[in-house]
Image (cartoon, rainbow, N blue to C red; front, top):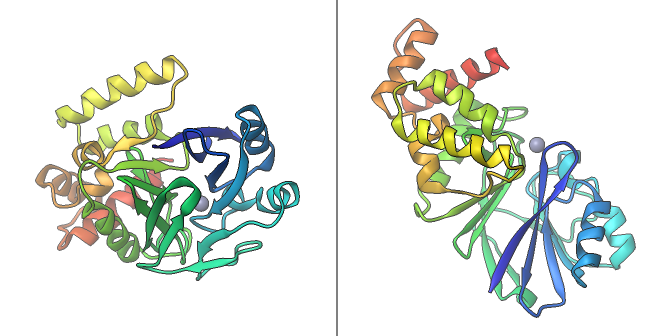
Length: 258
Ligand SMILES: [Zn+2]
């Protein structure tokens, strides 16, 4: 059975390690740093079999060359639309990544917004979404437009509620702080904030999260909710005419507070 573990890196990054019981090879998603990956795999008697990349930012790709130097040539999957070091498989929407050693396969989803070529990996009930969706938030729009990001998040929203969402950063507590400003009467959100505080007080990760919980509490997946629309219109000072406009306003609102 496929198992996913977090390898913490830098301040608040998670590099995801994919393994199966009794297997000798692991895959990692977004290795921004090689050292913690090597340390983790050594500790578990594993070697690296594949690297999956969601987008080009250094905190997601910075460890690739050292990992290849350490483990030898291996497949590096990543977005066709971005420059990724040592990329061997350039991926676009609806491509399939099959990791035979792990008996797992993933469908690629194009998700421009945070960066122009950002991709997501969906399969086995899991979503590796890099810096597109965060637990309780979403990535900043460094290269894409709000319209693009809204469309990318809508693709995530269309996935099954039972999907486990593996984002690349532990930003949840701060994200939910903003969510509470935007939707102060959301009861599911209050429960999530309490649970998140409990986990963080114990030093535990709040990722992955269930997509159903994101839909119930993440303001960036709730652009059709009357309470959020009203709050966004209050911030904008005028009426908003589409969910994409609501999304753009809420993103702008959060940016103005960061
Ligand atoms: Zn990024």
